[in-house]
Length: 146
Image 1 (cartoon, rainbow, N blue to C red):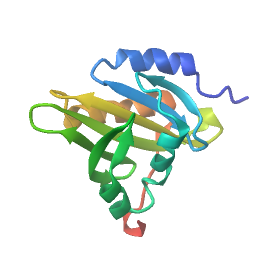
Image 2: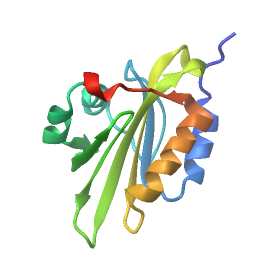
Image 3: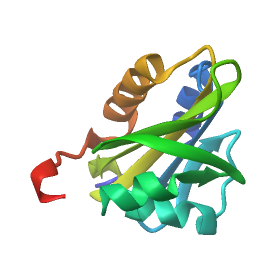
């Protein structure tokens, strides 16, 4: 029988990710499974569900999290990421989407932020590993169809 994702275990694992400033795990129905320093509302999370629909729309609109705007400069499904700030002070953001058999086969999203000196080259591989180890399997995309 499907036990679902264990929110307490996921939170414990998120807390170990000390290079991530914020993180939130939510599903395709906007149910927040758990978060670390990131109590975003369903209204704020809703646009992330459409982030994979049209590249130009996502890059043009960027991301908003906890009232902060982030420019999106990389759209490589199942990963979409960007940043806010400048070369001295900044925060990156990365969204990952996949399917979780542990969560009734639903799409589950992992959104993280990371502050300089941590950059996407470090944080995004951590995010991929975290997703695959604790949540499910990142989706496969045919970019030609996007």
